[in-house]
Length: 425
Image 1 (spheres, rainbow, N blue to C red):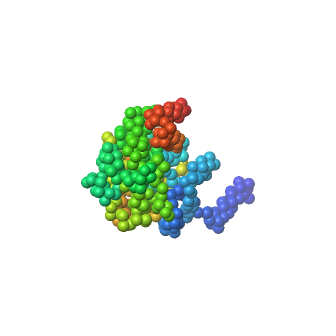
Image 2: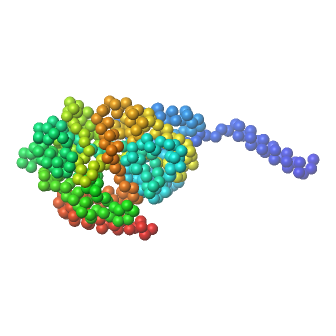
Image 3: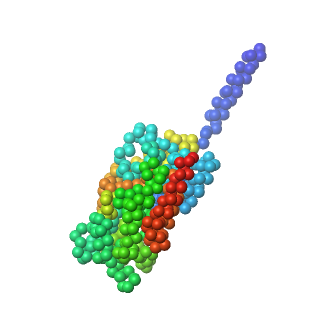
């Protein structure tokens, strides 16, 4: 036997051994990592995902295993940063309304435009929810839940005060709130308005006044504009000039009952949890609760905060990750997920499929207002720094350590410097 034939036979033997070895040792399942940040405290969200949705997805994808982690918001940023730095980021993960600019800018979210174009479901989502996932014209995620903020008001108290419709303008808001406020000296027995000291409330007033936080390019602050100063001044006036709500907030009733549900406020700007609280703590009050868009100055705005699912660019199984994302977005699955936490499904067909939306007809008005007037936060990488600085400026104005003009002028300079750092890079 010549040398060449020996080599060939030896190679064939090795190949046969390899094939036999492959037959006797099966590869393990493909694993996907899913991180969920929004989940109910009563375990309903976990039960839905762990016992129904994820097993159904795995059954439809033999050989695939989904590992789901439920991560509190307080730890999400840290865990995401560490996982991306270590090259072990989750395949699919949930983030909040302020995240898209930062994730896209840092390369931590996969652009999904091509996949979405083939999917063809974009137009089924509410525009304000969808825009939460868009940065500089590209889409980086799919909306998973939404929370529009509207005006909740007591119809009975408003009628007793002589008003036949909910306030439609800032002037009417102040007038109605004053008429419904009941005080005994400095103590509020009934607040005309229940408002937190929050940058989110200021942003809503800012938008209603035609103002913006920064320019279209995200390179210059517009918080020193007349529209911004006027918006913050009105916000402060509700506390000090009109005296319709306490600066420290209304103390909660016994058992931690929220202010509006405890009948201690006539109006509040709130998302759908205002209805949830009334249903839970004062169901007999529900027929007297009205729902309206927040009063306008120059335009109507309903601010919409949407949490969404992103895909990691580090994923080794992007097609399967996309399959998981779109599976969770199927109308019945999306409706079931939102039902576990009383959120608004950000997809029209999911609203139609949601039994809890039919059981809570008040939520249909939230959907209508979100669809007609909804606006999401503008996308920018610096949102987390912005909201911290903006909160300090709003607090300084409301608590009187600075005038609204001073507070916004000072923070506007800080914001310009922050934005300039990115422009230089």
